[in-house]
Image (cartoon, rainbow over all chains, first blue to last red; front, side, top):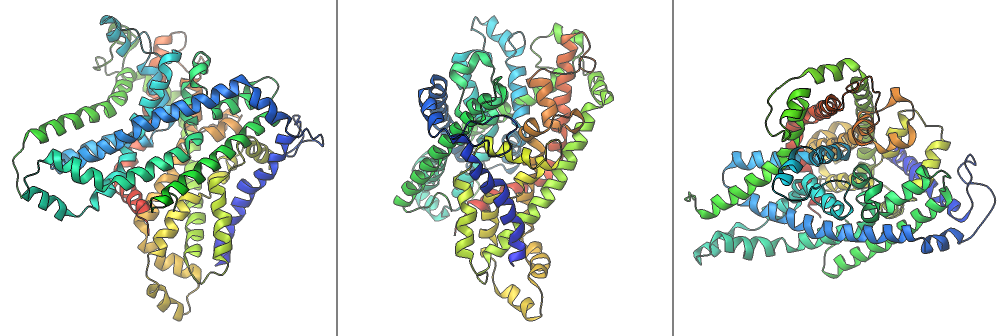
Length: 289
Length: 285
């Protein structure tokens, strides 16, 4: 028994717990080539104080929140509506085709989805040629004002099918007798969808909402990292991309400063998750387990 | 309960057709470009319909060899990673699901804590570097072998399996490993297939660990090569389209299409498991 657990525990110890001890460098001045724990020079909270005054970090924090808010307010209703519509389809073949089509994007990497976005939004080709013909300004990945919408819509494209599965599962558990009695009362299908299906999956919707809010600071890196470019940093830079940039692309690799930003992010994450779980418990569900 | 097709059905089908079209269109668009010739690419800038259906850039991609080599790397990483990850995750899940395991109450929080708090990118990078895993496939495989979330789903699933099944095997003197591999795993195939699919997709689609830890071009996994080629626009000018940017674009799109094909080929066989797995995962005790 314990032998079965051993690999998992060892892996967690090495790849989750040892790095936590490595967080000490957030309180030191790390120089390249110093091993995992840096030198012996302690600087206390210096990096955190610098971080709180860093305009670019503040901007990244605000962007993270705005993009997350947009994402939740578009992608969550999108997934619910898709599940509701799919549930009403009676032709099984048609349903199967649509499901397959909307699930596939989930299995493509963000590298591939980003290359779709780059290609589709090429200013000289395709859609933008049409738009120009209609006198509408071009939609491109280099426009700061359009970038957030592109991020949210491409996320919708990739994940809406996958996210809808949870709601489909919840709809399946609804008692068919409810629909039958509603039919006796002469309810139309639209009314049944609105007054039976939707209320019956309310709790699932709330749990998913709470979970998404709980993971605001952890999502979006792969997507934005593959789609952004320096010209959209004012609106598109999020905490994770900021940390990566500070650590790996600035000429002086500021590992200590970046580690401090990472620790700050993890602290926000744990508070958000705990809040999410408490809220879920207060309505009699558990969001996490 | 046969019913007539009403206005509701028509509106519903129309919306879903639109949704399906939107899901399909980007893939189609990229395919059209990938089969263009330099001439047709400039002629029809909309790329909504394949005029040329010319696969010569595909041949050039395959002849250049980079993509195939990276694909081989990805297959090795994905295969090894998925098998090992399933082994680690399923064994841990089984052990934790049995009430006879003493110390469950202490071990479980130790595992769950890592879901809530992570050290972040920098300590992780320094750790993998100091383990001398840089420029090895192990840097891409080991860190994601243990997935707490999938383990919890698997554990819940094992919890639901009746004890009486293994009681009798226990009486016959079967070891825990025997019970797991000859009884529990065979009756959990759908769930294991689903989790295996998620692991497989995760390994196949990973580019970020390669970005951090792989500098040698011969070790590039596929997604990282694509990222360099399409997203970062870095490539050997000899392999991508030579002097012309137009054929360069076609070359890139042919590479993208080629790297999607394996997913499209495997997907139909696994779709049913993934839907099942997700649904089982969402049903709580």
